[in-house]
Image (cartoon, rainbow, N blue to C red; front, side, top):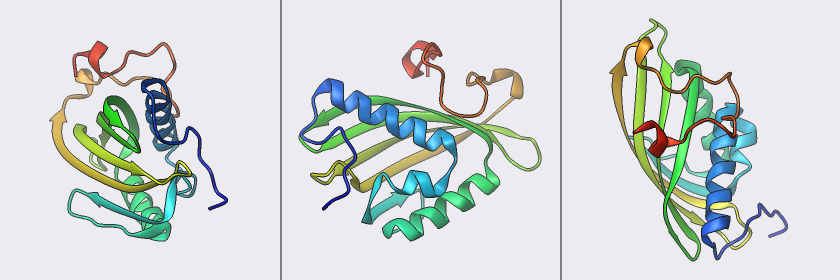
Length: 156
């Protein structure tokens, strides 16, 4: 294993928070190839009803996702951690091709290899249709600004 993605397990609260923010920033890039590099080559996922295995399938999954979820903005928050595992809760906002906005809520369980790459990701997600006026994630596309509130501060 020559690839490394610090911080490495076992995680402390500080390094778990760093890992969560790095994942959030990566997903907010909406760059499937870049995001996939945070996962082991043989990564195993469960995302809603899809079960991608390996980086190639992850890239294909994310490409499809961001071709239908427009103006995607995501916030992740650490829920708990132990050894090489992290649990997060998240919410993201996006709209479909007809302009209907959604806020998607969920939880993820992550397991990391010793080199800091995620080897397993299990996500459970629910979508809620919202009015554009009810959006809370209003920063310009890309990483969430450091001074933008997180989920708890937003009451989500």
